Structures are given as structure tokens and as C-alpha cells.
Length: 150
Image (cartoon, rainbow, N blue to C red; front, top):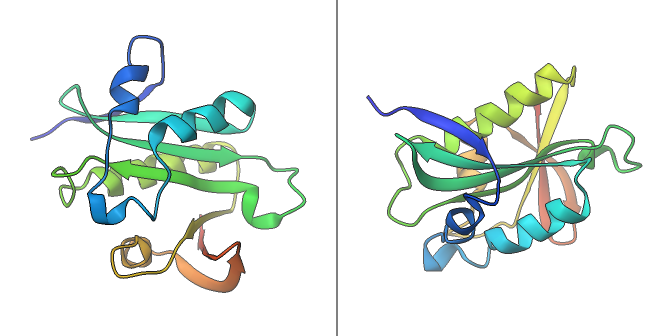
């Protein structure tokens, strides 16, 4: 059985994190990990970036965001990014990462989490809906806002 863990991004694994690349057809739906890490660096009190490891090997990246004072309610708690390496998808790594962010949200006493996605044939909408998120009907900058009760 594969052992799945999350690791904080450090100087020892930042290169591995930045090398995570999604399927080419998914590139227009999610920012590269390097951009996500730049955003995390600019907001260290809010961003929660993690490397997804399978048996100690990097297979993906996830970043949660926790800003309970945000004036925009769907930016208070949620998943900001999820990148699973091309060729490694469909093995439960994304589900594991989403559950880890939701567990962290619960640990922070949050009652709701959100995720935003760009709709499209190769986008992540169906994945998030299968995990229990529901489309709120809100669109932010072309992205649909999904939510899940915790």
C-alpha cells in the first residue's frame, strides 16, 4: 500500500515542488507551482503550501488558504491550488491532498471550505464535485466557486 504524506516546502524540496507539472491539456486550468509558491511567499500568514509525497516521492502540490478575516467570504478558507504530476493522476493523490486541506480547516475550527475552478473539458470541476463540493453559482474572475460544509 502506498504511503501518502504532505511535506512543508523547504529549501531541500522546493526544486522538486517546482518540477511538478500537470498534463499539458490542464495547464490553462491551474497555475504552475512556482507561481503558487511566489504567492505563498508574499502571504505566509495565509498560504499553506505542501508537497504531496507517495512513498516519499513527490507526486503533487497543494496549497490551502486560511484568511478568516477576508472581506470576500469564499477566500476565508479553502483550496487555492492543486497540481498532480502528469502520469500520476487517478491514483488518489488529489483526493488525499484535498482531504488534508479540509482536515487542516477543521483543525482551525472552520465550518466551510471553498475551491475555485475554471470550467472546461479538462478542468477539475467534476473532480471537486465528486469529492462533495457544490457549485455556489458565484463566478469570480471567470472561475466558479465551489463550497463544502465541514
